[in-house]
Length: 86
Image (cartoon, rainbow, N blue to C red; front, side, top):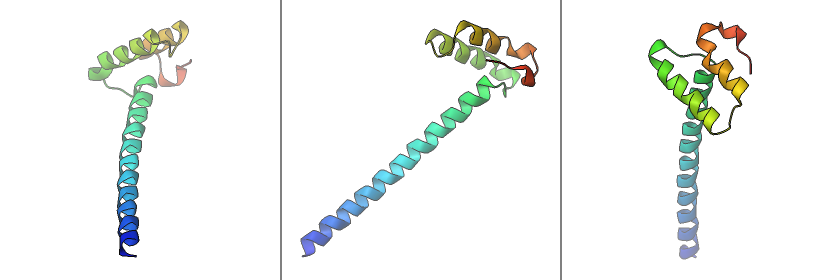
C-alpha cells in the first residue's frame, strides 16, 4: 500500500512541476506577443526604430505580411497611430 501512495505522490509532484513549466512558457510566449504587438502598432521609441524596421523586414521576408502591409508598417513613422492600416 505504501508503494502506491509513494507513486501517487511522485506523480503529483511531477504534474505540479510540469504545470509550473507550462505557466513559465505561457508567460514568456505572452510577453513575446505583447512585444510584437507593441512594435507593429507603433508603440516604440526612436532608439527602437531600427529594431522595428528589422522586425518588419523579417515579417515580410518570411511571408507573414505582404508588400502592401510591409509598406504601411515601414512608412508608419510618418503617420499618426490612428492612420495605421493593414
